[in-house]
Image (cartoon, rainbow, N blue to C red; front, top):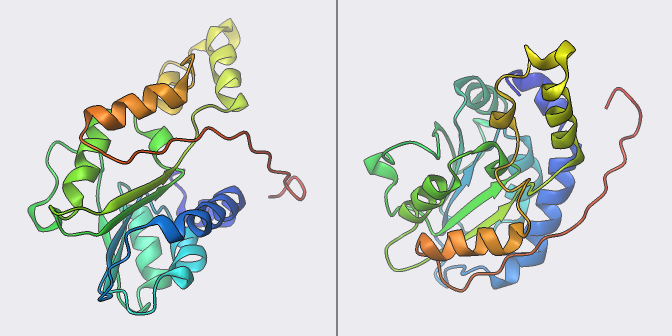
Length: 216
């Protein structure tokens, strides 16, 4: 996760799912009639999912898109590779920060986030901050992330074994907060309601991705 160029090459799942979800929900998003939409993507990583798979699908007259990540290295990589893209801005942002930077408050019409939120342990704070990013008279958010994954069970198993225990002391930092939930959909919907969102739709989907070889 900390090696931007490696993540850039190994994000086939994110590419497929982000594009699929964005295309599916495009027509229900509140696109401005006058154009001029301002969009922020939370957790853009190396920037390829947003800039190569989602950016081409934006309305032609949108105003700006901001690519953000909590990792300075990721943002630097994205800026280096996509910095010349028209109407694109790159900025470091930790969505679980105590205070959203003043210049971002109420700035955006749309908040996007793909394969990021399962890395955030304080999802309540993240959702509160996303709400602050939206303009005061409305807007929408579109999120896709892992509620659960078999790899999390591998982490938990290793953490219990004597041979690996000393290397797995921070295991829970890398497991989705919803992984052990009996009903992750209902739990996340409740969290959205409690953090001020309306017109909420939450779907839990079982997806499979087949990698084309061990290198990928």
